[in-house]
Length: 291
Ligand code: PDD
Image 1: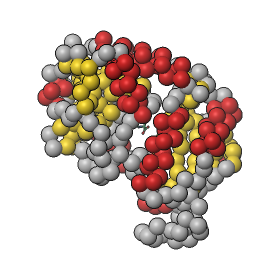
Image 2 (image 1 turned 30 degrees about the vertical axis):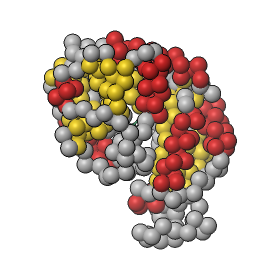
Image 3 (image 1 turned 135 degrees about the vertical axis):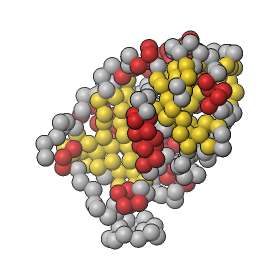
């Protein structure tokens, strides 16, 4: 099979051509979605908020009783080396760690002394990622029921329901879906969700029900530093439809306006000033702090 790209990827300490990096069919990431991941953005050849991602990775591993197979220093070195080898100016680094490949399929966790974890890193090249024209137009979303498991604070690779959510959005002719549980929004399929009402930024409080976004943390800090009012609480779809603005955040989209929810225009139906300002501040500050 010929490949469209020929990246150098990282697998268990080795840098290899992507077509030569092979993982066992017994790997628990493949059989049981027993793995965690991170996505770190690269702008101008530098990593955005590497520390934040490393800290969350450590937490995800700890919550699943998985040993960290690599030190933070080596992880940083791996990220930087892949940026260099693949000549990435703008894009992402995907990192995945699984509980490794025991000799056979078994629900019981293997002994970590006998089964080393699998670690994979690869780059995604996205030239001009920070200048996405979508930021000028905004996204349309639908709401769907949140049918994910209860530990969404752990960044696991079990992404089937979020994938199904993206497909439901696609079938409805929109860009993404917001997940609703007990009548209130949890988050987007692969991002945190926000509304703006009367100048106040409203986003769901942290708990096991949502992923603790690294971009969310940074954006809320920048918002507070800019004297914007922030309220961390759940909101309904009706509230979003009646809001002045809405937006999402994630490592790959930064701050992205949402202009329509379930067919109803949010505010003027065009990207609003708060989202635009936050995007600008986030990109500026993150670039400054990038390593
Ligand atoms: N997704 N919520 C969910 C469910 C996510 O999957 C993500 C990230 C976020 C935002 O987190 P952060 O700001 O740390 O990227 C919130 C990544 C980008 C992905 O799966 O590709």
